[in-house]
Length: 348
Ligand SMILES: Nc1nc2c(ncn2[C@@H]2O[C@H](COP(=O)(O)OP(=O)(O)O)[C@@H](O)[C@H]2O)c(=O)[nH]1
Ligand SMILES: [Mg+2]
Ligand SMILES: [Zn+2]
Image (cartoon, rainbow, N blue to C red; front, side, top):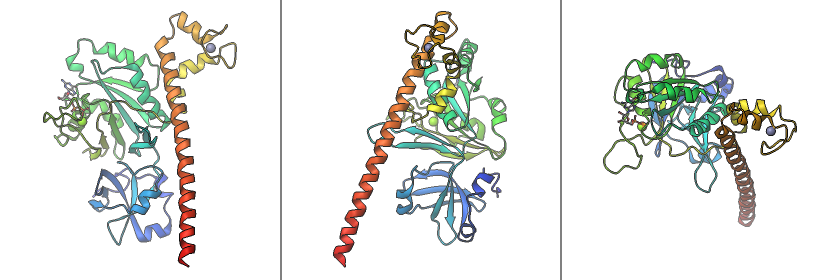
C-alpha cells in the first residue's frame, strides 16, 4: 500500500499532529466528497468515513477533495481536518457569499481551455489569479490542437498575458500528452484540472490514468439528452505516483478576495503604474501616466487594463460581502448563545 508521502503527505501536515492525535487517529486523504460522507485513501487502503455534524458546523471552509483528515481508530469517523498547504477557492454564486473549495493540497492547477470559442484571455486571467492567490503553480493547457489550423496563435495569445504560467497545446485524447505534462506529475504531487464544460478535462484525466474512469462528451452539465458529464470532484491515482483531480465545468469562476493573486497576474501593469507621475494615478486621463502611455504606444493591450479593473472590483466586492457575512454570523452566534443561556437559566 502507498506510503503517506506517496499520498501527498508533507512535513507541513506532520507539524500539525499532536501525540494525542497519533494515539487516537490516523491520517487519510479525501478522494471524494459525497452526501453520505467522504471517500478516503490512507496507508490502510480506501474506505468511506462520516463527518460528525458538530465538526462540519465548526469548519470555516468545507472539506474538499485533496484535504487531509484524521480518522478515529475507534470508528470510521473524521476526528479533525489538517490544514492544507494550498486550497483553491471560489466565491459562491448567489447571495450567501460563502467560499466554495475546489481542491486542497494542490501543487499545480491545470487551467484548461480549447483552440476554439472557449479561449478567452480574460477568463484565463481569472483562473490564474485564483491559482497565484493560493500559491499553486498554474499551467495553461490548450486542448483540441488537433482540430485547429493554427494552435500556435492560441499559444502566443496565452503567452502574451506575460505571467509565469507555462502554456502548452495538446490533443487531450493522444497518449503522448501524458509526456507533455510529466514534469508536473511526479510521485506525491497533486494536480487539478479546471475550466469550462467540454474543454477536455475528463478526457485528459482518462488519458493520464489510461482508462475511462471519467465519463466524457458533455458540453452542458445539465444536459438532459443523455450525455455523460462530470458532476462531482474526484481524485485519482496515476501509475507514476501523482494524484489528479477532475472537476465539473464551471460556467464562470467567481473570484474571492484575491488581490495578491491579481497583482501577480497583472504584474506588468503594476510595474508601469510605479512609473506614473502621481502616486495615486487612476490611469484614466492623468498627465504623466505610464500605463496610458504604454497603451498609446501599442505596448499594452487596453483589454488588460479593463480586465484588471473589472477583477479588482469583483475581488473588493467579494471581500466586503465576506466580511459582512462574518459579522452577521458572529452577531447571530452571540444571539444564539445568549438565548441558550436564558434557556439554561430557566431550566435551573
Ligand atoms: N479532437 C479532440 N477532441 C477533444 C479533445 N479534448 C476533448 N475532446 C472532446 O471534447 C468533448 C468534451 O470532453 P470532456 O473531457 O468531457 O470535457 P470536460 O467537460 O472538460 O470534462 C469529448 O467529446 C472529447 O472527446 C482534444 O484535444 N481533441
Ligand atoms: Mg468532465
Ligand atoms: Zn497612471
